[in-house]
Image (spheres, helix red, strand yellow):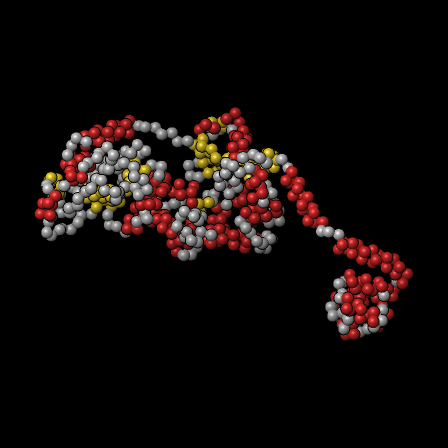
Length: 522
């Protein structure tokens, strides 16, 4: 009976049932004579009944082995009771492991090299001097030390096949291609990310040297003469100077940058004109009084003869029945190096995409002078090219295909401005930002996606992650499972991948990354 009780306790039979068996004096011989219905009153579980009947039959067939069996059962029961009394060793082992990690003075990392090819950053392969290097570095190392170590790896003796290290702008990013904080240590980054292996990338970009051409020098001399002459001339002379920059056959609206109040040829700190000298009238179908000292950043310049009159007689010169207004040209002024913020500020005005007026762009150099060139498409395309490159760097994530992400300083107004820039660039110059993932534009314009989400996602992830995912698509069983789990964890996967569900997981992650996360932006 003792052996039977031990068996029942091993199977977690309730103590009340065991007491009933003892009170009813049910032993092995009685159990062998019971029917299944009779045993059900003691053991409701069918598995428990099978185990008890099997035990009883073995006891009947092998009475000589009862003593050995009994001792083994007692030993097993004793070991179970001992385990219950001992404290949980798993927590202690975890603490010991954590303590070991905290006592390390070095951590293993992976280092790669990404070079800007004019379109975006591309990871350099080993045959081009790049590749993924594994090394152990002190936990206290920061961004500066990591960059120095990366230079030694990829630019031995300060140069490689791409050029000297002095020709590049250097930066260091993490596995998400985000620049590292200068004060964060390797140990702190491991603690924050909880990754088993961290990867860093040295990024290089060619430094563009500004070369001032002879034409720019001539333009600079002409602008200086223009400013000096205006100081000694009356308003009619100033008006004729404006015609050197704009055609005289149409009205021109000059729209200065809403972001920067840098001096322009029409509102210069050197060309200070007294308010009393502005009492003029224009013999034209549309009469607008310009104010060079107005703070509105908008100056309207009208063609026609300029005749100085008294302010009190101004009303007598206005026509009684105005004629139809001729088309106007709006000129957007942006500063080289600040095109991203200034173009967004300009296109916050939704009328720019609906106006019948011609819109042109002029670029101002840091010295406050216009770049040489007329906007017949090329200047605006140059402006758009710089805008979208800055947009990719500041507002998107991804490798070959880019996906916009939410920024706390980008609200509804700014995202709508970006949309107007896309629309205006397409209508005016057939210009589209082709590095944006096609599914982004499809979802924003049509409200649905027709392109392959997985193909877009594979071009969004890094090259190493793409190689891991592609190998799993081809042959899941032979792929590196550890790398796969690490890659899926980077995108917050909540399922264990198998050969059967891997495609579904990939589609779900692609939809979450490309459609759900940028939903507000779209």
